[in-house]
Length: 129
Image (cartoon, rainbow, N blue to C red):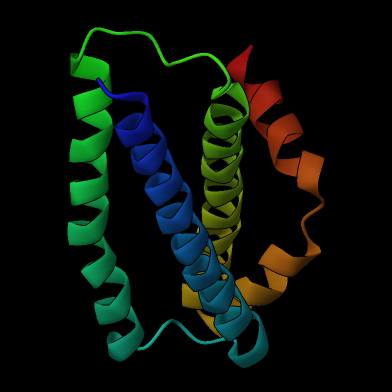
């Protein structure tokens, strides 16, 4: 594959990941400030990214299926792609935690807030033996 095309695909992937990162940050801020679940309008915006990401994935597959190694000098760009994906995964994990917390009934929210991070793991550990 042409090195210029490979670079363009990777840069587009970084841009897509940045856009999605901003959307995830917005989602987390909404849930933190309002304590409510995301609106249907927001979920539709989020769903619209699926088709865009599918196209980006198809472009990345073209690089993979070409059978040629990534051209020298593009290692920083590949690292940037990986870093963006890791950031997305971390923000999405935090949003999933907020989604769980915000979907609980009021009495359970109080109990959820009082649980120390390692307390659940220790409780499972006792019963796993």
